[in-house]
Length: 529
Image (cartoon, rainbow, N blue to C red):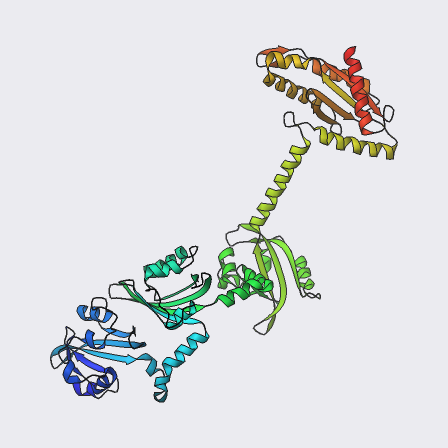
């Protein structure tokens, strides 16, 4: 076994069970630039492990202590700027438990022998052209290494002093709005013992602005699932983000793709594809929905109408849109807006549907309508009595004048004033006075027809707009009767009377102002009587 190891073309050494070097092969002497005679009896960590790692932090040393085999563990060597792959195997040699220790230069092994020395330069050129840089984070002491390309990406020159990189200084560079999300994603990955992590976030440039970074990393754990190291690459994707933001059409496509996307066959309407947004929202898996058609998800559209919609995509625009309702697997319904167009999917004619959930928009529209109705009510109705106010009465009278001119008909205004109402307010207070006005408003509303308008003109004045001119005297008597009925309010019994003035269109006046003035004048005549 020892002879086989010494004849291997890759760097290898044989260690005691505590990590002390017993022997090294010639490939290891060449690779590490050492003499075998001088390293026998030394600790392997001091000879072949990454020098920036302390022995208590080194995952290889921890594996030796716990007597755990290691297969293909990649560690970055900060001094030589290369990544080494280590393998440790505990095997008995000559009746003694030993460790066979392999160390391979991954960059060199991935490149033809005659081009080995060119690889680091090629990597640097590639990183520079892609605006990317490498990093290595020691997750034990929170120190970090970043490549020169990483520094240049943030605006620093190679020779320029760069602040020491630690977890704290890196977090300070991340945009304040995103640090919580980035650290949260990292913690989720660590909790699940995931090896790969990818994030997109902003990092502060030397000049003070922020650049967009796509970060990818590999997390290494020890035998107890404790994270020890993360190695990865940061790529500047600011231009890519800027292009997305500048292109409205691209943004629309991106927004749509984040919603529900369905593709279904033009032949039998069976679904051929749906994206994650669609699966998540409707609750079907692809195997389930592949047996369905859009008609199963749109219960309010019949087959005939749906084919009419499909035919509309044959127009010059080659697409159409419509509003509908979508039914989830659990039976719940939600409002959607569908953008539909022809496409080719897997060499077959198909349709692609971009479906937007507009539930919130519908709610917002309903709220706007409700607010509009509330504003209209505030502008046109009296808050105390719920009768039409002066603004709405004016509109109604103008409409009545226009209609009467066209039909050669008449209408009347009855101007009602509560007698000695000031005495009620002064004696019993405004709260009692308001209750009196509300009760009179109810009586007048109950007395009139639905096509009449009863309005509070102001204070204790009411106006009734009616088409029933022939019975105007009868209406006056009925008003006197209902108002004069006793009022019982807060243990008080009140006797109320009113004075009524009448103006008739077109007999008394032919415009709004004159009609109101005449009705008011007639009311004062009645009050004097």
